[in-house]
Every structure is written in structure tokens, then in C-alpha cells.
Length: 248
Image (tube, rainbow, N blue to C red):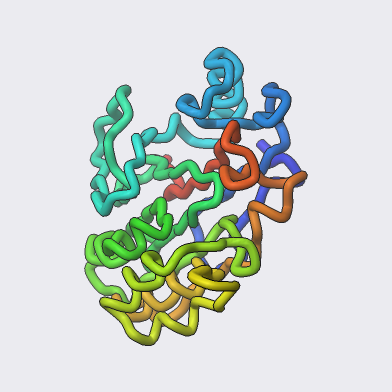
């Protein structure tokens, strides 16, 4: 089934058989600040509408995704062949099972997709600043046998001209990586603009991943295309998904 025109297909050199996409606001049945394709059950939207939105999503996937309860932590769940109907508490998922769908929900945080060059393993990671600082990227990369064979794609997140943070955020990154200072631009007394894409790229490189693709989005500024929690706390959630083609 053809994806809605507004959804995002990653532009990266993933091997044949690895499929991925990120949703936008379009294509669903929710309205108002949740309009239209809100995939977040805990967002405050009408659960029946979210359920319908997830049915619309499901039509574009080989199976129902393994939903996660995201806590801005560093746990990456390894998905086997058995599908669990309940949501798992994790901020990332990875699998080597063909047809299993890994996915994360975001509304300003960075969705990060990973796969190996052979197309044997895929992963989806929810990487807000807390998760990035705590090591979610490194944890996800370590699930792969060889980090130098890992490809990474960064989906829609709040952009570097919009993500205003306090000094505690900057200090959390500089404590582990003084070079991360380049990802923070001063903005008035005690305020900085943080570049999530740059911070994630640095973490990937330090974990052994040589290159990352994607980025360049801004969920806050692109209000017609993306949900943003910073723009409106009664916000929907975008979904970013990856899987290996099922074996016939």
C-alpha cells in the first residue's frame, strides 16, 4: 500500500529489505491540536480516535508495531518472534526477526533509526535530551555486533534554532564530552539553543558509528506538518518505524 504523500521515507543507504518511514500530522481522524494522525494513547486525545489512527497506520506495516511506554531512559528492548500485546517500558527496540516492527513515538524528541549494512538487524530509538545524555544511543548501538557496520537515520525533532534549554542540560552533556559545547549556542543569560541532531551525531560517532543521515527538520516551527509538545502540550505524537521485510 502506498504511503501518504506527506509521510517521510528515510533517504539513507539502507540495504534492500529494510523498510522505514516516519508519519506526519496528516492521514488520520483526530482534530484540533491532535489533528489528524495522532498515534499517542497517553496524549489526552479521544482513545477511540487514536485507535482508529493506529488502524490506519497498521495498513502500512507488515504487523502491528510493538508499542513502548517511553520514560526518557536507556533501556532498549530486544524483540523476539513472540509479539506482546501489552506495551513494554523501554525507549528503544531492536530485532533480527523479519517482519517485526520497531517503532517510537515523539513530539519534539529525536527518533533515531538504526540498521546494519547486511540488513540483519534494525532498531528504533526515542532520544530526547535526557536519554541522549544518559546513553540511550550507546546502549542501542551495543546491541549490534559491529558498530562500524551500523547505519543511522535521524527523524523529525525540534530543531537547533528552537530548542531552548537551561545550563543544566548543557552541563549534562559537557560532563561526558567537552566537545559537545559546539552543539550549544548562547541565547541570553542562562539560556542556550541545543542541537539534538549534532548531539546525537556525536554520540553515534563515539559509539563507533561513522555516519548519520537525516536531520534538518524542526517539529516546533513546522507546525502544519509535525506535532510539538513545546508548541502545545495538548499535542499528538508522531511515529517512526523500521522493520525487515518478512520472509515468504
